[in-house]
Amino acid sequence: MPAPQKPQTLQRNFGNNSAARRLCVSAVVLFTLTCALQLAAQSTGVLEVNGRIKIEGKQERLKRKRFYLFRGGLAENKSLIDRIRAAEFVSRDCFYCRMNASPEFRSWLKAEDCESPFCREITAEDAAKVPEFKAAVEKGSRQYAKKPALAREWLTTNLSPQLRDGFYLQRKKAIDGLLAGMKPLQSGMTDSVSVKAIFIDIPIKPAAGKSTETFLISNLAPFEIGTKSYVWACEVEIGAEKKAVRALPVPESGKKADKCEVFVRDILACDGQGCAVK
Image (cartoon, rainbow, N blue to C red; front, side, top):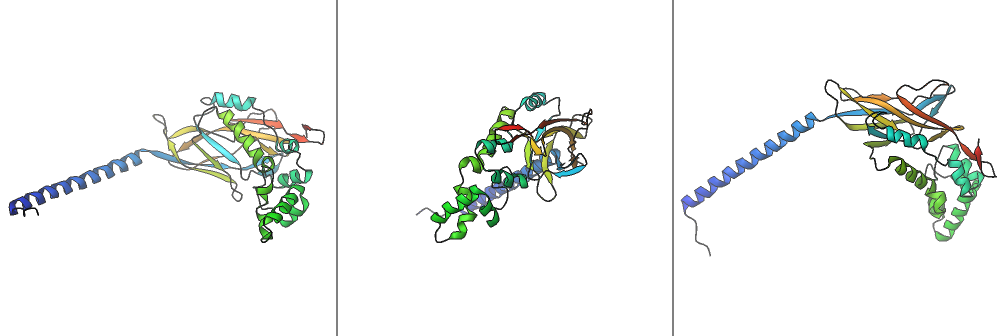
């Protein structure tokens, strides 16, 4: 058993512990102040991309559409713009046509501008009308004999992989090729109600004498609207003082959109013999 310490030893240890505690408290306070100063020095901004556009007088709503944010403007991202200009994408209709999807399946996708069966709820009426859905439900009914409701709720698990997520995977591969190793600062998707994509906590590094920094917003992969597809690459000035808002211009004949490159192409569609311009 250790011998009891002398009173003066106890007093010395207590004094040392008090000093250590004061040192620790000081270190914590200093660390907290340093972090606060760093956060204050780092400016951030907010960007809102408006997914409502007008084409030939008709308003279109770009719901569930993804956009990518890059630092720098059109000039700084010239190599990316050049790759977008040269890119070739297979249209949704042609992709599913090549997968031998039925006209009913392709029409179901087109009705709500869906790119895959995960886009919206598949109703009992849908399952009865679309051959691929009907076959998937029948297969599920054998698997979930005691719980028939699951057959429709989980019917996507019984679709072929190409019909289930083949188009998404093909687009992802094409986008990866466009990026060529680049990493977007952020990406965001428009919702189905406000039809806006919101980017928050964007780190801002304005040049000397400026309060904003130039960024590029692009969808990279074409959005299909009517008989055309559209890809935007637009500059936007983002600062810390107020939210930046970027609309998506549709170029008029013979005119160039302000601070935007807009690539408009005819969509190829399935006509029973293959794919051709609509």
